[in-house]
Length: 332
Ligand code: GDP
Ligand code: ZN
Image (cartoon, rainbow, N blue to C red; front, side):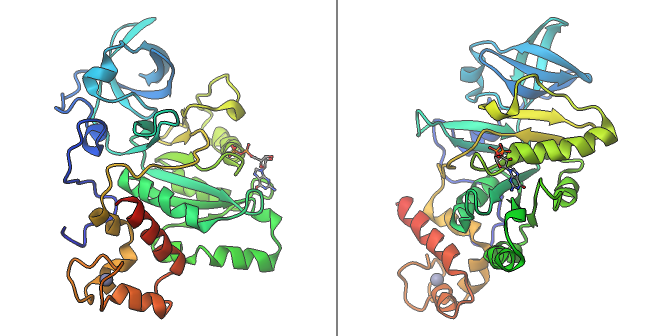
C-alpha cells in the first residue's frame, strides 16, 4: 500500500458487489452528461423527494426501480435529472456525487444509508457537560467525514456551561485535532460565541451538521438561520418541526450556501475500510513512519517502530493511537 496518500482521497482496492464507496460516489456506474438542467434534492421521502429546480421547490416522484438501477438510494444534496412537467415531475437519474456521508442502517447494519451527498464541509457538533465531551468518539466521525471527501470541522457547543478553567482544560483535549488542521470552534447558542466562525466556514458551501442528538445541532441551525435569513431571506424551510427530524433536510440559504440538518447519529460504520488504508486517516503517523524499521509497519506489533517510540515520548497523542489500535483490531 502506497503511503502518503492525502486524507480524504477516495481510492480503494476492493470492489464490493454491494454498496462500495465507488458506487456511492458514482451511482449507476457510467456517467451520463446531464441533459438540460438539474435539480438539487432537499428532502427524501418514501417514493418521492423534494427538490429545488429553477429556484422553485418541486415534488418529484422517485420510480421504484431507480434505487436498483442506480445501486444507490437518493440523498439530500443529490443533483438529479428530472423529467415531466410542473406538478408531475419524475426522477430520471442521480448524477455522480463529489462527496458523500454514509452510516450503517440501524436495522440492517451491513447496509449503508446515505446521510447526505455533495457536501463540502461536515461539522461534527459535540458538547460539554450535557452530554460531556468524549474526544475519542470524534475519531470515527473524522474518518467517516474524510473518507466521504468532505472537510471536517469540530464544533464544541454549550461552552457557556464551563468556567474559564474548565473551558481551557476541555478545549486543550482537542488540541490534537487543531494540530491536524481540523478547525475546532467553541460555540454557544446562548451567548452567540462561535456562530460567526461557523457561519464563515459554511458561507458558499454545502455543510452538514452531524453529531449525537442533544448536542445542540438544531439550536445552532436556528441561531445561524436568523443571521442568514436577515442577510438573504431566501430560506427554504419545511413545515415539519426540526426536533422530530428523522431524515436529513437541506436548507438553501441562497448564494450557494446550503446547510443540512441530519438526524442524531450514534455511530459511523467504517465499512469497506481495510487495515492498510486505516493509516491514511492518521496523518500524524506519516512522517514518523518513514523511520520505522519496516516500510509497511502497521505500528502495532513491529520492533523499532518510530510511531510507538514517539507515543512513549508523548509526541503522538495517546488517545488517538488508542483509537487506531482499536479500529485496527476491529478491521481484522
Ligand atoms: P440536537 O438534538 O443536537 O438538535 O440538540 P438541540 O438543539 O435540540 O438541543 C438540545 C438541548 O441543548 C436543548 O435543551 C437546548 O436548549 C440545549 N442547548 C443547545 N445549545 C446550547 C448551548 O449553547 N448552551 C446550553 N447551555 N444549552 C444548549
Ligand atoms: Zn511503525
